[in-house]
Length: 285
Image (cartoon, rainbow, N blue to C red; front, side, top):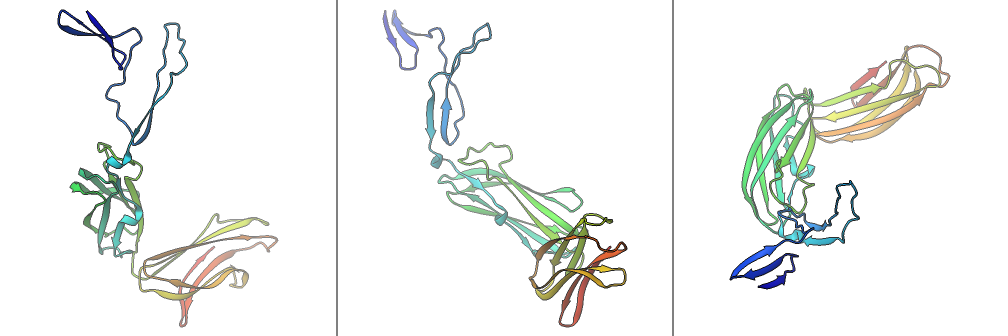
């Protein structure tokens, strides 16, 4: 009988021209363990019936070259909305650019595109499988979306390989979101919000101004002030020249302390003006 101790830890022996393997006590092996790109660390511990556990064994590190895998990727910059700020009822084209940053081609790529509207409702837009994306390649998916009744902030959500069935060098870049605004009507939108509707003396008042432009670009003057009930200015929070390009969204935040201002009714008056007069205003009490 010939006996050989194999590098795997098994003992092979031949008896009567028959090969057999013996597994010594304590023998173990890792089988069908999926490896991740980069370093993979393996170690073993022994446990006893008493509940005691041995210290970990010496580690074995296997390095899997990430360059052999594809890398599906998408970012917010890869999501395109046209027009960028549609008016409610206007057909909107949504396109997404799916990338493969890896040096290997990838096949049968599932792509899910959904949209969350201003009311929080999620609408499936597209579920499609891309047959193949070559090394460092791209693929564009486009669809038409009806914006009727969808005024407010809408969010496009894109997910690649939802089931994680495609081995990749990086699994963390497979989803992206992009928010865009649907205007109720073309032109300027101005909103002023306060953090409360009643304040005592020596209290901070938080003011937020939101500006949106779904029309042509405009050069305007922004004025924000605190007025008493007679319209007299108690404080000026801002006065500046601004440019609102098409599809722009701008926000401004201010804090005003009431100090020892006389008690009474006050309001935040926000004005947008051009050379001809008031373009939009938003008084909030």
